[in-house]
Image 1 (cartoon, rainbow over the protein chains, first blue to last red):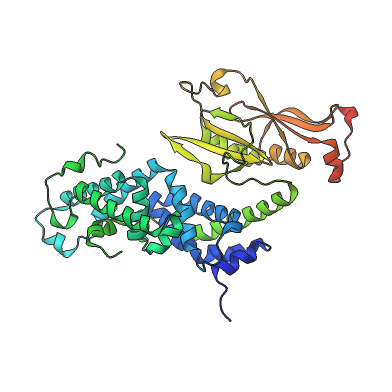
Image 2 (cartoon, rainbow over the protein chains, first blue to last red; image 1 turned 90 degrees about the vertical axis):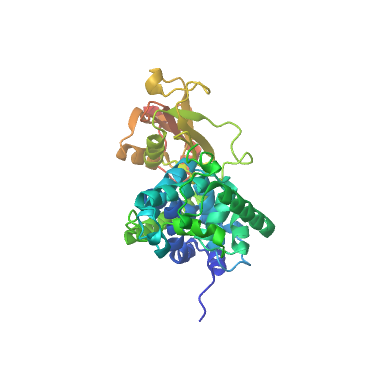
Length: 200
Length: 203
């Protein structure tokens, strides 16, 4: 017997609300991880339930030709994140500190720059991410951190696939301007550094 | 996306096992339990009300809805949901300059809850103003149950539950910062649901 798809479960929940529990069971771990990445564990805990409750309230509008609910849930979660910019920026700062504490990769170990430099460089990357226009940041995070396909991002953010591509291209260009590549251990500041300061 | 330009971004990504995320497995079971009970509540509310509310868009927000000012707006949201049974529309919550704007609904009504704003919007918490100048009137589905919950949750009742001469069973309470609330249910509605018969004589 085949497992019912997400679309089947959502359709079943129109008449039997408890059928929606399966959607949580299948996607909660992944969505929680996403929220932790973007806002931190404390905020993620409260928001995880909100994502699924909002999804439940909107289930009548779910397009049941889409077997997986993951992109739809990512979209709801991303909208919630968007309402907490300040917290997101705080989290990005913490994220840079976490990255700096992670064991360095081989190329970094060989670099003359030490741990202090690594912290500084990760901070610069985080600032560059924070300085992106929010729609570009959302798109990039879904692609690069969450590994969503262009098609799934288009569904999540309710935009055409061409817009996914163009946002990623613009983000790529801006990041090149704003942040130095972390691998190369440059110590000079780029012109974009100040523009990219978190919380500015 | 397999792309050298985003390599640094990918490596910035916090992963499970990173120091600040305990990855408590109880979070999932706790959250699911709360979700299913919220779903259950959501269902029974929809059945007991002629109209249910989606997001507070211009389309389905009542034409008049108040914005209440609090010193601590998040404490207010916690209080209003726990004591008076409001449901926050979490998707609508806005963070702005470290303050929050929240939308709470009960039945077909919506109230906005925000930080006291004395510069632009000229609204104060009664705590700061030293007095209250308006009362919010709220119809509820089962006033007896509403009253019992509010009292159990520590509501400061200012007018005891009574059957008023104008055809409503009502009580009044003051919230954590002094906003004044009047809850009521029409006699016909009480009879309709088979509740304790109204007795306006003891009003």
